[in-house]
Length: 217
Image (cartoon, rainbow, N blue to C red; front, side, top):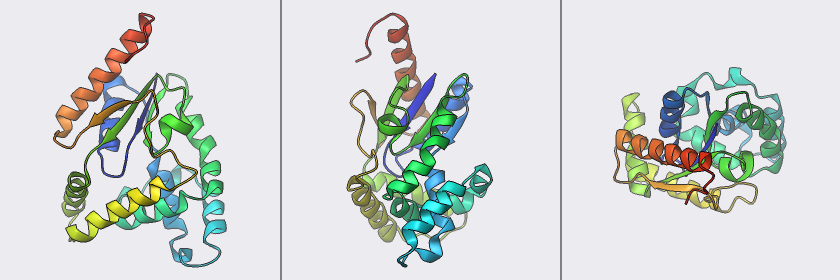
């Protein structure tokens, strides 16, 4: 079973994907970490003409050893850099095979990111699109950072999220938008436990309908 989980930054998609993976005993890949790792690898060239070529080279050289430092990868800086390198078609192409190989391994997998249901796994058994309003997403990300002892400027963080959404929406190579056959789950007013229960219900219902030969609505 392949489960694709999409949504904007800090919508809760990563936490839900991890919870779904644990519930169904499937491996999980946070594909956003790939772009964050590439962004961090070329951070010192972000304002230089060679930024795009450096990002493509970093994407081609990426392996799982670059995904270990989750604290650095989940920083606000890494998120901004990820959205900048994600607009490059060469970066997306370099990371496509990595993601497809993970998704199609024996037994299936759970992948979360920005274009999973639309580009990486258009044939996924279940697709979820997680959304939440900008204020709720800002507060969630702020609490994550504060747990690490980071002092958070909520005003600046809110605008970073708004700016990243705008950049992602204009990305011609991405899949920021909901796939036609994805199930929408708005987590704005949900805690993680309630959101996970809702996601599990969607997956169970979708798979039951498919097993019975019906198309999920």
